[in-house]
Length: 162
Image (cartoon, rainbow, N blue to C red; front, side):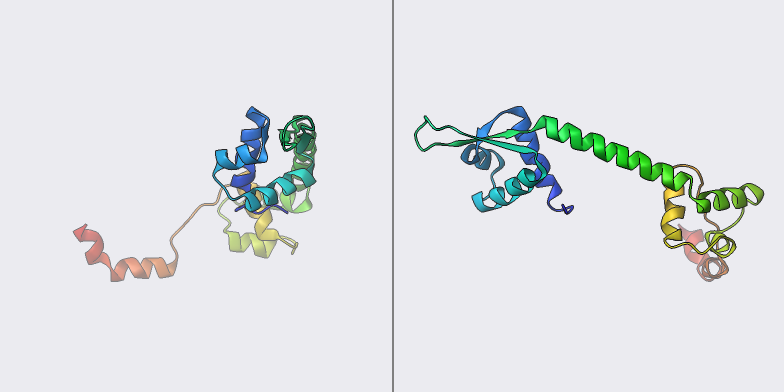
């Protein structure tokens, strides 16, 4: 699995190779990274099938030219897009989606805590609520708590002076 720290380097490598085929040495110089680090990242791309290598047998030192495999990349992008759409459809058709939307249709003032209490206890319910917010199907509204009201009362002088 690729981490968020690895992603920028992988993207830089892919972008450079999309523009032109080049040797490991040239790519290393262009990206200004250590050869061992570059080899590590090239192996990740190679394992994903996004890298093609062509050995120049007739040239001195038999340099290896690296090429970005656009076809494989596009195939993987289509697979990921399909998977994303399937997961979205699954979330939209999940019983919890209907429960939450129905409850909020009946009472739009329900808090997150009240929603938790009134809905079936599904695993990852908080994730589901956040997903619905991100999809624009529900909004999270904020209201002041008794603790917040007490805080304001105790700090009125600070509020009035600003």
